[in-house]
Image (spheres, rainbow, N blue to C red):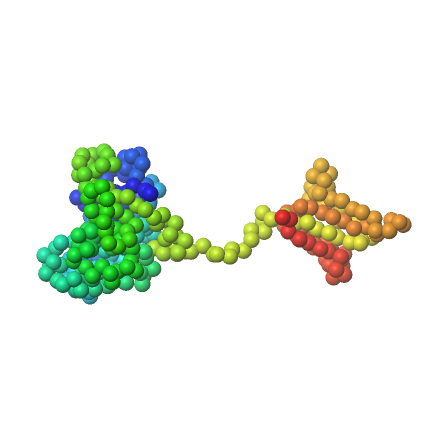
Amino acid sequence: MFDAIDVSKWQGAVNWADVKKAGISHAMLRAGYGNSVKQIDPQFKRNAAQCITLGIDWGVYWYSYATSAEQARQEARCCLEVIKGLKPTMPVAYDIEYEPGILALSNAQRTAMVKAFLEEVEAAGYYGILYASTDFIRNRLNWRELTQYDVWAAQYGSRCTCPLPFGIWQYSSSNPLGIPGYGKSLDCNHVYKDYPAIIQSAGLNGFTAPDPNPAPDLSTMRQILTIGPVTMGDALQIQALCESLGITGENDLYTSQWNDTDKMLQTITIGPASSGDAWYIMRLCERLQLTGQGLYFSKYAA
């Protein structure tokens, strides 16, 4: 579990260094509100820049005034425009509260707005989450229709009784985390999921998902080479190259064994050698026509 705060212009110019010093590693920032990109939160850009600089994982929320699904979609587009080019490591939240216009709607209409906003966010490749109070979720939404979405639930007290599974719980607005400068007035949250890991591994929020089957880094891999049987002349050339690469001598990575009692042919074992050194040895063996005769063998060391 992680501790997090959520802030907007109402907290003024947050001293993020103090926040981090207090042990807070996560934050949710108001990006804006309503249906215009001009309604960006005046502290958002500064807050995001400070979080990025200090290594604080951050996400955003957009405060809704929508009264229809289409207006909620437009709010989502505004939010996405405001965060364009950024890579939040926490979710993008639809903040729906007790605005008069919203309260005048039916549960079905409000539920459609939640879906519209989060569908727009997810279609753009971001991790969407619903922010609302437990009361709002239980009594003013058809919450059973929203089980596919993550939830950031607000309920002040000792436990959260939200009917939907929640990844973030806003449990207090009285600054129990003791962030300097805010007295008894600051929203605090428990974060139950490792959102940065989830988001980055899924390639969301502008991140590129890691390759599940990455190509091996050959620069760090070691090879065992077996060459032969080869003549004394070829063996001397291979040995000389190995000496120049530092494979012989103290490293003791070069051995040879006679293949016959007359000591005319020998088999050479080299390694573990770097892939770079192995490449030079292979090229020499090609010039000596050993690879074409099937006298050069290579395998990666365990």
